[in-house]
Image 1 (cartoon, helix red, strand yellow):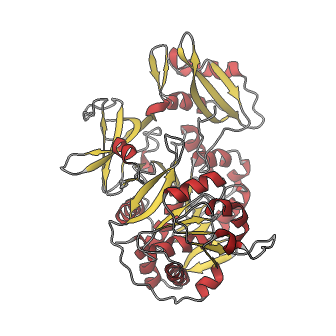
Image 2 (cartoon, rainbow, N blue to C red):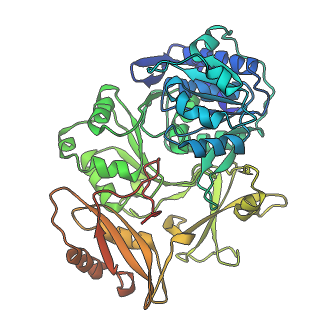
Length: 517
């Protein structure tokens, strides 16, 4: 099974059904598939060959979705780059994967051209839309390769499905993520990796043809990307938004589009829970809310349950290298609100100690290992990095994913996130889990967001510092925060410092980051 066959099968079965709502555009499955076929043929005409990498530098739009499936139909490999990415990083990514073609917006071309012109492998650029500032007509001459207009390129091609060579072990996507060296690294996902992950996730979410999923997450983020891929698999509809920048507009979409699925990250839940008017709303069609990127604080879970009564809330854990690891069945939230669940269908997870010995006793901290068809092929042309993460498994020749994340597993196999291995704080000779301290902070009424880090301390080795964002109108002091922590945490876990912020630094995917704190 190839990823783009999801789209082709849904188009054959449901040609008139709405596949995508993107702003004012509403696109049926038949039209989406035909457009992807045209783009595939256009890309081949521009020199894209079997296995070539094609970059997509667009915001969330119908053209981005067409590009993803069109690139796959051309037997090529897609990578979606966040449109806010700076020139130097764009140049690095394009050169690193030796991209053959780039799809971007005409309005971005002037800023992207500098990067594109420094990529020897780049043969062609496809420009979507027009530059509102006006162009001088010299784009192709300056770039040195072919420059095609999106509308013209697609109009000139047949909508028939192009012939193909790809098989399921071929590379389908490169998803660039932060690297230990400072440069991003490309996570290699084969067709079968993506198909395996998508099938497992749609199974436990119980997705169905009638589902309408609101996607406000960037398609450069695998969580946002998979909403499109999964919907194509089960024949659902995706309502694509560029961001969660205007929360009330998003809430209106949930109501007006009869949204049944709403994937979020913790920063979105923090914003939702400050919108007091939501308590008056009724979302009759909303069936589930899912969360990943970071575990939802218990206070967020209880808050969401009050705002969205009857809606199933899925607390999940995953990482780009395998897409998704675990999910907590909504009926377990009351019993184990701090758990991120058990391994998803068609996957096995276990913990290992510092010597890579399998941990069999419950509630012992160890590194999480993932075994399944959803595990990546490796990092693009980074054998040393790959060898650290993919290691021999139980069967001869098998490779399993060492996540680097520390967990505990209870007697029934439910996982509890402790920390990233390199985030553990060593204070007073004790190892402190940032997550445990952050859970205590989130339990304080009035705390909206919180993160803790270790800072150098001559006596303690590392002292714990908490960064806190308060709900508007809350008048907590640092002494209040420390007193509440002291009441619920062991002495060595209580922060030494508290700093209040109006907001916390976040990645482009909305995840709170400790970098720079």
